[in-house]
Image (tube, rainbow, N blue to C red):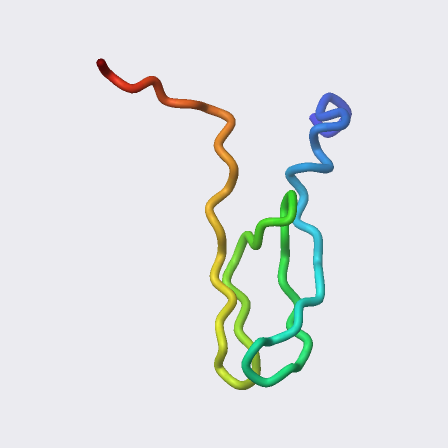
Length: 64
């Protein structure tokens, strides 16, 4: 089914990215989708970069 994914597949594939640990200054490899961290990344010093909530394409209607 990959042939049918088209251009949208590139937005679903996690991309490795280097970020600097704010605690010790070492580089940490994190995986992102559309710039958001998709899984927790732990530095050697113990600092954790938490995963962020994905963008939701669905918008819920509020009851009035």
